[in-house]
Image 1 (tube, helix red, strand yellow):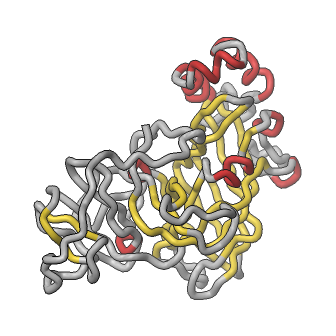
Image 2: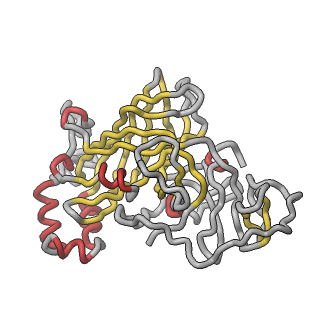
Image 3: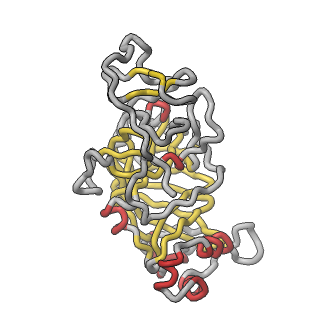
Length: 333
């Protein structure tokens, strides 16, 4: 295990089958998971691990790949690998990561120019995305983990993952620094795990900080959001991130940041077809909601270059603060 996101997560039991965790290799071209901003509770299944006073404390400390048939029991001090389930990763705690504590659609003049005409673009500006309320309630927990962080202009990796407040120590203020959070298992491509861990589904692979300014790009960024009362996951393509960061040896905060990209018009239409039927019924059904989207979120970007405009620009303003990851949480339906 390297000193990366492989040092991120204390393993929590997520099923009675196999147990895997995160990594720092970071890839963002895996199949998009179906996650909703309305999912607010963790489902860890019925299986539990009881403390074992007879655990072999001379066994290797957690922090590497456990042998087949072993799992990291975090209820024993020191944490040791012990037989519970097959194929389990065993991870040490990590330094603080960044949590989105402010999130909103960017003001018109603060959006990105995605069409090359010198004008800011933000087709979702009039869509009324429910962002800050979801952050405040804990329904939307977005985390950024820097791997190889530096401020000298050298490229490093930033994994973008979805999380939940630690159920044993729920923070009263979801916008405060220092809170404890778990990471959702679907944030990682569990089909690509190797001896270094499992890559993140979303990763900014070439992030850099020059004179306190962060820049980075990712092929996609997943944004679970409610639009006009309907929960959707927007897959923002060709996502860019930028902002002013604090901290020389560790990322302390982002007082002001911006995230831009495009949402494919066909993907957005397809997302409506699998949205919650009850939510759609409250706004007149899928056809009525799709018509509302077409009216309020115009296609303004030709994602393939010259040709028909088949993408919808989006620009977000955000701020982050440092929080702590304490384990891997359950996948969400």
